[in-house]
Amino acid sequence: MKAKKYVVLNPFVGEPKKSDFTIGIEESLPALQENEFLAEAVYLSVDPYQRWQRDLSYPYDMIGGQIARVIESRNDAYPVGTWVMGHFGWRTYTVTKPDDERFSAKLPYLYRLPDFGDLPVSLGLGVCGRVGNTAYFGLTEFCKPEPGETVVVSGAAGAVGSHVGQIAKLFGCRVIGFAGTDEKCEWLTKELGFDFAANYKTVDLGKYLDQNAPKGVDCYFDNVGGEVSSIVMSKMNEFGRVAVCGSISTYNETNPDKMKATVLQPLIVGKQLSIHGFLVNRFADRTIEGVLQNLKWIREGKIKYRETIVHGFENAIDAFIGLFRGNNTGKSLVKIN
Ligand SMILES: NC(=O)c1ccc[n+]([C@@H]2O[C@H](COP(=O)([O-])OP(=O)(O)OC[C@H]3O[C@@H](n4cnc5c(N)ncnc54)[C@H](OP(=O)(O)O)[C@@H]3O)[C@@H](O)[C@H]2O)c1
Image (cartoon, rainbow, N blue to C red):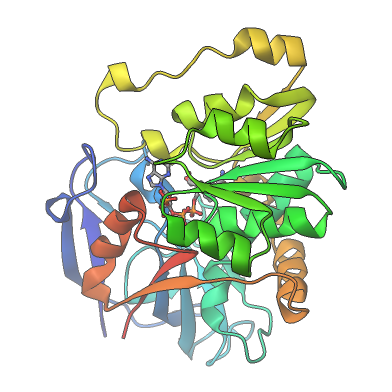
């Protein structure tokens, strides 16, 4: 049996390019040893964090989560037919076992999917996986929204952002989202129940917040960083809470002069803001709790989701680059076949 995989050849400079990878390198898989199983990838996850890995030496096998099906097994806990989320990278087949040190740096790196019933298993990479948990734990643990408060979400039509805004609505908040096209903003307000949404590329965000958050912003869930975030934070109320989840507006920037945003420190002090950077890995031991909570909300029709699926293992880089061009709405995925 042979697996195909992506190898990253060199650090990304600016937007990732096909020439940064070797696509489809073949690797012979060993026969299964006691305790091991063979997993066949069905969906690959495409995520912004795959752009800013800084602790890996080159070349390295492309990292990433996948939803895979066990097709051979010598491990009773992972019988044939089991669906798993595995942090195996962009590869088609994987021989692995629990506590496999090749993958275990990324927590959680392996678990059996709960029964999704008639919902697609791809949700295990999105709303019922790492993305959903990022939204759920990031919002509830750091923004701690209260009913009636105003919550602003940037990157609002993406995988994490679209989920965050809906949870904030469940908590009884007034929710404002910023996204990169008018169509995305329409989806947020008309389908997902956001109170307001604006295109950050065309709207004066400061004026927009003055109009639509006249009592100020209590919570900010920040997916994009940069000047957008400085504007939002300049409109925050005393004791406002910021969850810094990501800063995608900076990931491809090569010009240090453009990596600057308005100075906020006096305002942070004056308003006594709480600003928390976080990684979802920190909640690895609560993974299934988050997955089951999000699954429950989806089954109850309280959370909606969208997936942007690129078909074909060879096309994963197109999906990856698409993240930085705003091509996706909701979770970006690659379906292998
Ligand atoms: N802390 C954690 O543990 C954790 C976990 C997951 C994700 N994250 C972070 O959360 C953020 C969202 O991740 P995701 O997986 O949900 O991705 P995503 O939002 O589904 O996809 C990326 C989106 O970012 C927007 N974008 C791209 N370039 C931008 C720019 N220069 N300025 C503003 N927006 C830009 C695009 O939408 P538009 O059309 O709106 O521009 C694009 O669709 C990322 O920063 C990611 O690194 C952090």
